[in-house]
Length: 124
Image (cartoon, rainbow, N blue to C red; front, side):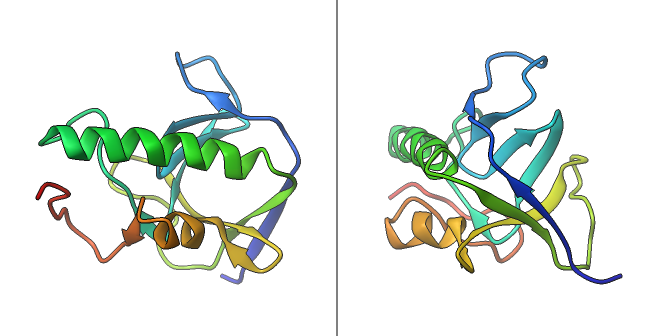
């Protein structure tokens, strides 16, 4: 299966319940058109099952920054092949603008790391 692209030019909010169609769940999960999407190329700190206060604080900053990035203008949801979904049923996609991954911005700002499978601690 080849690459698929969807261009998005919608305003996003923070998710507060299951009825929102375009919202940010956390630093690496969004809902677009009601579909849960896991940003495939990054891992961000947890905000629900966090292990320490530093993880929660950084996770909340990652969530806020992802919302800002999504609302800065049109971006593309990209499926490059491979696994379509993760173990939680979220679609695995990259979010791109001008051929740059939005996840890379979070990595560069210290709010995410490249996803390498499994869970690693964000606590000092």
